[in-house]
Length: 248
Image 1: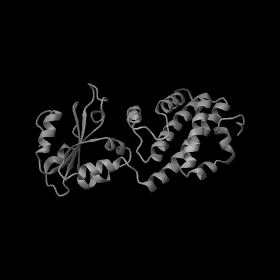
Image 2: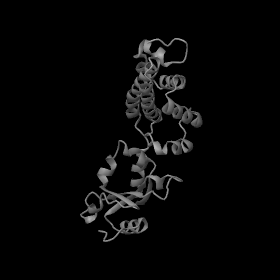
Image 3: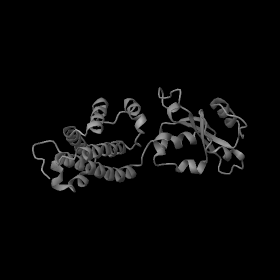
Image 4: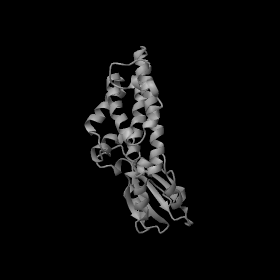
């Protein structure tokens, strides 16, 4: 199926679904998130081919128009997709599954991190969060206001990575953060309060807001077994915590 003129989303899906070499069609992006699509949103579709397919459909890989964005991959490659793309697939919609549910199982697996993988990743993200927070509050103390705000904004990114990793989920893109948390809250966190805190910190670098949030994060991280990562900061933890002793 090589288009001779711009394809509509509906026409493309219908044609691809009729091709026996296509074993799966997966819609990601705004149209896969209820209420997020706008007049400017295109349809992002993974076209999954059988590994032994001998077809010209690969020419469609990278096809882009105002309405349609296609990624064409063999099944084995689709299984391996990870990294930043993992969240996109975790909330994707399966439009076609010619493998008796296998495409749906692959998509579902993208949304759940392995326990060991999550534990290892969480330790690194906790340390990165603490590092940016420490730099922010220290810079604020020393009068470096811009540096303090930039470090605070950096810390929010690491914090979100950490919190979703602790729940064994990929972090959503910023565009979908509120959408995700409103529908799938993080256990133990009040969604409204968390969003307000990270919004304030990212916008202003408010030191007391950072310290207050860190106190909550520290309790959660220690409960999850990441006390050693925090303890490695030694006396510097005093600068991060709420309270009267903020030397360092």
